[in-house]
Image (cartoon, rainbow, N blue to C red):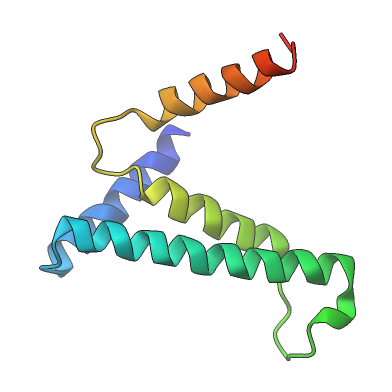
Length: 102
């Protein structure tokens, strides 16, 4: 997972140096991008269930769309003071506890 965060940080640095966009605008832009990618993932999920859902030339790859969603979500954590790895672990522990899973 560390290698993924290194790549995300490089991408974040690229966006910071190639644009004078304020951080709050960049954050909102990333939220919108995440929403767009979730929409594409939903479309890919529909195509997984029913191949006739999409009548376009382009084949939709569910796994690639899922990766896009994960990348966009993780990009939201770059530059923040919170350790997203720790937050994910805490959340997973909470969910496991809720279902009495050890």
